[in-house]
Length: 54
Image 1 (cartoon, helix red, strand yellow):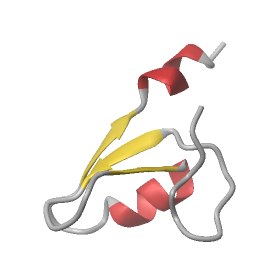
Image 2 (tube, rainbow, N blue to C red):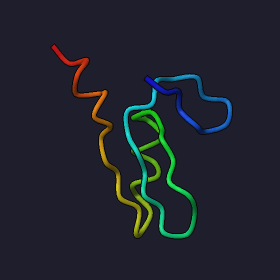
Image 3 (cartoon, helix red, strand yellow):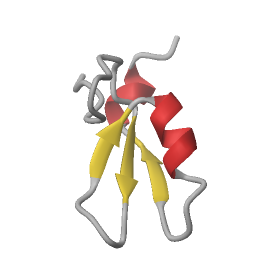
Image 4 (cartoon, rainbow, N blue to C red):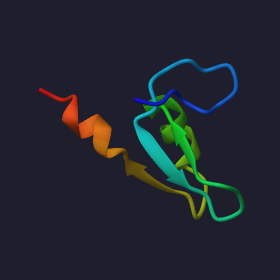
């Protein structure tokens, strides 16, 4: 599982963000919540995140 791409964050990435004005990013859930508040940003769960759920 990849690591969050936000600077200074070492959490596991669970979401891919589709950002219209920048490159897509993979981020942790906390950063995904913050980013998804912005207009035009779409958050998609990573397939690997589903596999780790009980």
